[in-house]
Image (cartoon, rainbow, N blue to C red; front, side, top):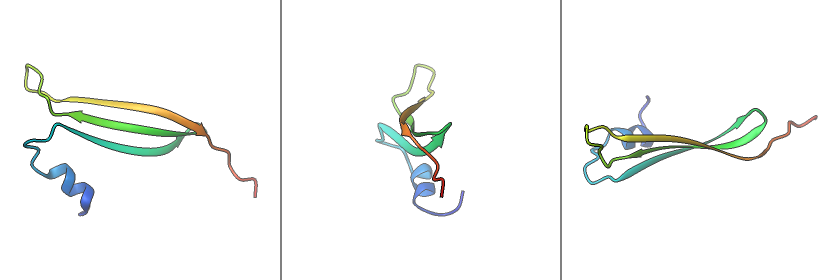
Length: 66
């Protein structure tokens, strides 16, 4: 990953951080979709993190005929 704010945010110390989210908007099968990747820093019993991904279709996207 190249230098920039996103790289710094993913590499910084997570002490005191409870949750991080990365939101991406993309077109999937003709639908504008909001994808949210979440890392919950509340550790499980085995010391792992809880990561989830959710996709939310927002609206249909039509290509311009122009």
